Image (cartoon, rainbow, N blue to C red):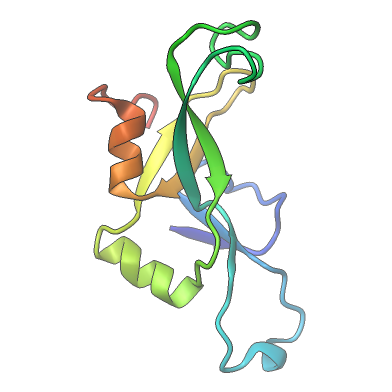
Length: 125
């Protein structure tokens, strides 16, 4: 797991990662929990229909299929996150790109990953 404090870091989306706030003086955060600000997502499946926005596969209109909508996970702290990933409570997910050259890596719950993949094999990992 890569942990970075720069939202432009080169390791983002090259493998499972998470991002913290940039800390200039570690003495200020001594004894405090570090919020994970990026790389951890909650996924919600939504039907691609009118009002959903452009279909992420067709790039326009709607297709009637289900697509994963990524939401930022909140209330995630680095110490507990490391323990939870070791326990399998968060797992890495790779989402292939639809518009960019490279896809997205993120940490999600096993339930969200299974719902997103819908018995398909994860591609591009």
